[in-house]
Amino acid sequence: MILKKEPEIKGSKTLTVIAEGVTIEGKINSPGSTRIDGTVKGDIISDKEVVIGKEGKVNAKVQTRNAVIAGSFNGEMTASGEVEISPTGKFIGNLTQKEALLTIAKGGLFKGESIISSGSSSPGTAVFSKKEVEEKK
Image (cartoon, rainbow, N blue to C red; front, side, top):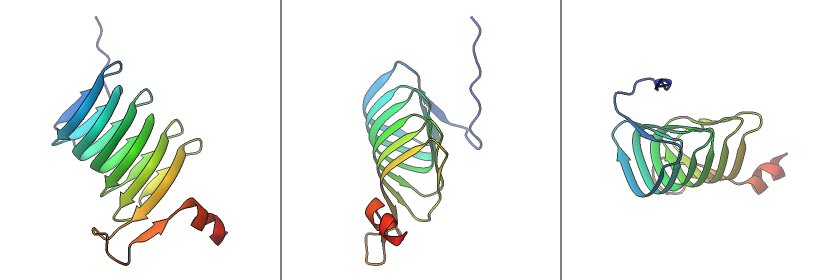
């Protein structure tokens, strides 16, 4: 049996992998990075990064620093760093960030709200919905 080495996620010493074909319902709390190639429903807290592979399907509330979506995400995500939606990625839901660090590659889908927050839901929080963006054009 030949094992295919997964690309290493930079800066990770702890990597949690949900393999293709695996389904998890519940809470995941990872002190490092989390890679999902299977199906996850519930809550995910990953201190460093969440990577949803092309075959990954996530329906969850996620808290992380950085995220890369190449599969399917549906839910709410709070990210303190960068969020990237790849050409095969689908993000449906709400994204809350401290800074606008969202990248959507050609072919990627983002459907929902991007909320830029100062860390609390106080006045001054900017919310950009699809309707508001179209009105500004």
